[in-house]
Image 1 (cartoon, helix red, strand yellow):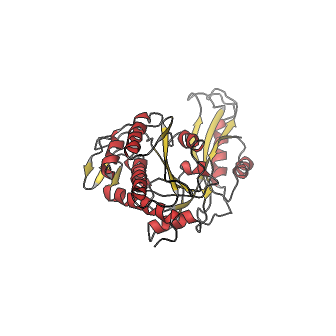
Image 2 (cartoon, rainbow, N blue to C red):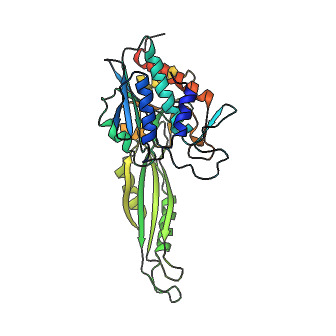
Image 3 (spheres, rainbow, N blue to C red):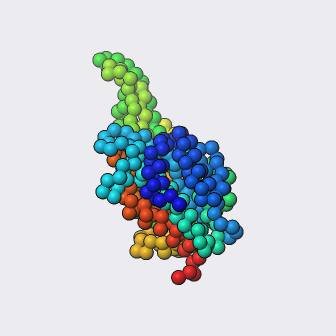
Length: 351
């Protein structure tokens, strides 16, 4: 069986920016075949089922990465190992989870297989369209529970905020800036920005807290000497199950004078009761871990209605950054974590 560090190194050295995951999917397909499994390709995604009969546990993570960007002091695709750290784009987010899930599941079923099944499902385009998980869920068997592999330090996220993106467009009337007489849409948008800054949320989710609302982009004006007749704001709302998306849209419309449009609402918030067997299994796999609420979105949003946790090796603060890395000790701990989690879920009474 390939070592965890060896497999992660190969995955990192294989470019897989969103939309170009073919080569890394080929590498994983070969690894799964070498383990005697029957991987099924779904475009640039793939899945494989281990075990026979019983409950099905879905282990999901993603193959794609964001572009390397600037500021690196090591080759972004070099998989350089220094002082126990493997550096490279995707090492932390989330190829470490992919490697650990694959090897953890393989070890769990190598001897004394647990009385249940595991579906390894690795998707494309998580960083952009979430197309991979959507395509996979249309093909894989219906899971009884799921684990989404993202860098959480192996702490189980039992809830995740959603993402609601809105645009607010203020309209005015253009005129020559020297003569005046127009209606400045930027000024109107500025009033809407101040109004949005005063929005408060009364209802609090027990794990995620309250939603957040931020104006993250402003676009207005075409020339320095023309009073702008249009200014558009992008509003980023991180949602919780305490508020329905339609309710949040209505709150924004009641707050601003500009025209509000929904840009994206596909990533809704999700949560799982702390007492659910998948949460208990995650805690059994990492004694001393503390369930938490995650403010960042992931493919978990597409598993809404399926009990799930988000947990994997690494630290999300390293994601998308120059010199992204994963500690090799974190990787090995991740392999053991997933192996233990599988057994704890399928054998809850086992010592």
